[in-house]
Amino acid sequence: MMAEALQEGFEVYALTIDYAQRHRVEISAARAVARSLGAARHLVFRLEDLGSIGGSSLTGDGEVPKGRGAEEMGSGVPATYVPARNTVFLSLALAWAEVVGARCVFIGVNAVDYSGYPDCRPEYIDAFQKMADVATRCAVEGDPIEIMAPLVEMSKAQIIKLGAGLGVDFGLTCSCYDPDESGAACGECDSCTLRRNGFTEAGIEDPTRYR
Image (cartoon, rainbow, N blue to C red; front, side, top):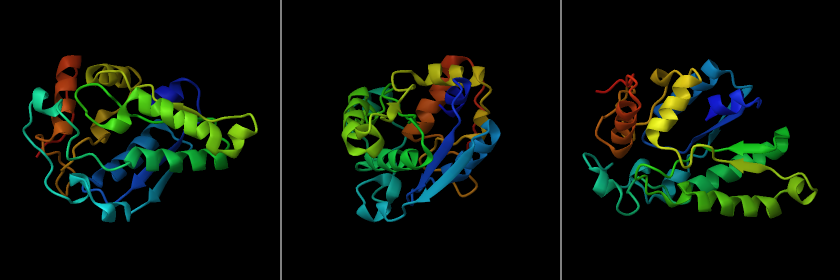
């Protein structure tokens, strides 16, 4: 998503949230990607008390589901759903956008490939846009911030092909919900399964380091 925004001519201010997630290796991965692609700035915002709310296997409530097939992944909201996470994240991004004078907020949500997350759907993005249009000073003054979700209706294979064409080094990235301390992916969680299948369908070698 960042590579796509840069390709379109945007100056990118990257935001990563540290919310005490079990896969905190994604924070260092985000730093590496931001450096690699040339973000103007990368802010890591600490929101560690989000984990104390609980309700998600990503913040310590239960185990991360593993070994699930497509049918199982496609039924219901998974245990890895973090309550209201994208609403919290987008609100923080909206606040920072007002401060730095940005007029677009990009979010890399994806509703395809059985993700099952309610806050990754196009209708959610549309609803948040309506809220942003009445909740910010810049919007009521006639210069609203646009919420952009360019990957929302793309398959994992399409996203990988797009990134590869834009020169993204996927070896720097991490998708696993339950990596080990070295950052090696488990290879069995839903995210690992969808990522691996995406590389296979795209016909591109998977550079992921699995344990």
